[in-house]
Length: 145
Image (cartoon, rainbow, N blue to C red):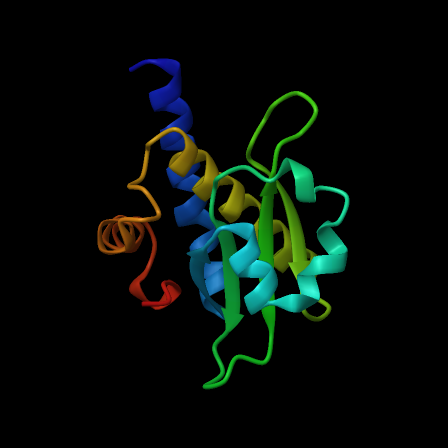
């Protein structure tokens, strides 16, 4: 097993590890490009002004509360850091969140983005295939389908 395979396995274990914490309150989805996210969730615009020019072609991670009409949302925006890493993230919640939720959505999103970026998961444009892969690693209740 080469090092990229090892890192992908570690990332998959992060998805599994944080699923239980996230599933209690949120569902997970993804979308893009960033213009889509800014239009759909206008509250994120001011929080990403400083990274707007450094957003890679990776999906925005979206966590929504389990309400019939979601009352809470967390957007996790990928950005390219000065060292060239495209899977750094900016967590932008619509309301206050706990430290444990922040840690779970951050690590889950970074693992998800790493796996997308390294082809450890299907392309986010192949929605059905990616959904199936995520369900096999996590829990059906987590995915917005």
